[in-house]
Amino acid sequence: MVDQSRRSARTAPILEQSKSPTFTSKTHLLTAIVVLTNVVGNVCLSHGMQEVGRTISASPADYVRALLNPWVLAGSCTLALWMISDLALLSRADLTFVLPVTASAYVFIAIAGHFVLGDRISWERWLGIVVITLAVVLAEETPSLTSKAEYREHSQ
Image (cartoon, rainbow, N blue to C red; front, side, top):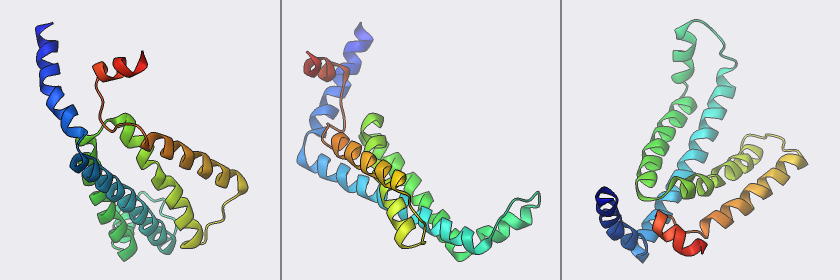
């Protein structure tokens, strides 16, 4: 019980800080960076691998050759930035906020794939994109950082 009260005492200032406009705007900025780097990195990676061609080989040389493609290299570096920014976002917001909100990247990747890479998108995929978009909007309306006590207050 004492350990739990110490934990509550440590999380209370964090929860109060998470309600400040500065904290919220930084969280939104970091969310945008996570989504943008995910989209750009995956589009670059896909474009580069289309240039490289199929790489199903036991030889490491084929994979090194693929990694040396400028588009693959740019995509890999951008996705490394995505991972760093995702770690930073997860350090300031709940996983249950981060994953649904950053799922908007799937929508933007599909749109970029269609318009930039020429991918064809069926009506079923467009429908899925609409569902993801609605879910992201719904998740964005929730607090980014919560506690068990705060959850109990709102659920009663």
